Amino acid sequence: MQSEWQFIVLFVLLAPIFPLAPIVINRLLGPQKPNPIKQQTYECGVETVGDAWVQFKVQYYIYALVFVIFDIEAVFLFPVAAAYDQLGLFAIGAAVLFIVLLADGLLYAWGRGVLEWI
Image 1: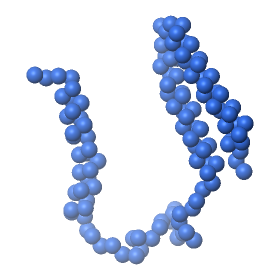
Image 2: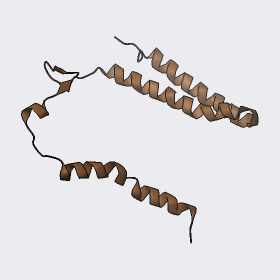
Image 3: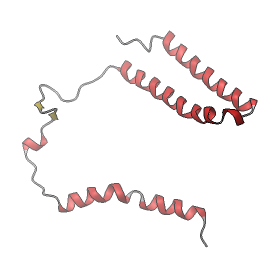
Image 4: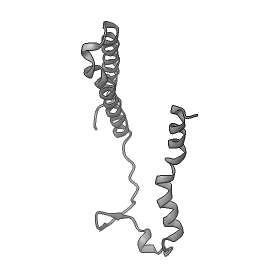
């Protein structure tokens, strides 16, 4: 008996094989000759000066999170825009409420000074 779930189970079982197989084959068959030159940090063809790990300010991470939130908003609102003619008043109201809540969060972050660069 075939069901629609068997393809999903097959996909979940076989999907990890494709990214892991080249890694495992490389580890088994590839040459293992580590040396200090191969272990150096490489940056655009120029030797790095100082520490390769740089700590960024927290504001950059928060700014990136705000960007991701509004990027996801665009993904969620795309189906609403695509099916606008077929949606009822409740769906439009839910989309407007979603925009209002995100705008409120943006105004809150802006008021708290989260979006200041320096």
